[in-house]
Figure: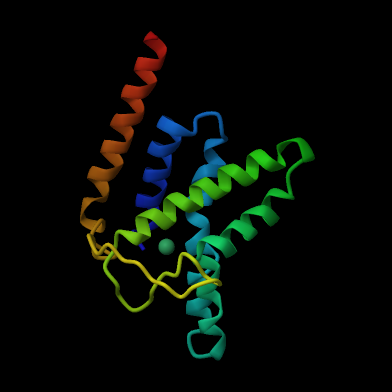
Length: 153
Ligand SMILES: [Zn+2]
């Protein structure tokens, strides 16, 4: 798991360049959902058999269903837009997680249909931490340049 700030920065950049018609807050929340729906419960139930149940909520198909359920909290005319924004944010998260080297757990993007676990193994899970200020600065710079070029267009 690249940590949540890196996930949020990636969501902001992807939103800015590809998803601008969607609500940014929902894209960012969607980016945080896979870890928020799985990690705290895994820690809370670390000494219980239930600890093996919650990581399932990190996978793309279950998180798509969670995003669907959360989108039902919106007014009917905004539900599909909310579902799309939450899902796209969650998929940005899944894509970033696939970049990391295996630590203790694995990801199963095709769960429950397959236990296939691809890893590209480019980053260690904490590799982004020392670069957080730089990641935030680059994100801010990209968004500023994009905002300026939109203003001049
Ligand atoms: Zn994750």
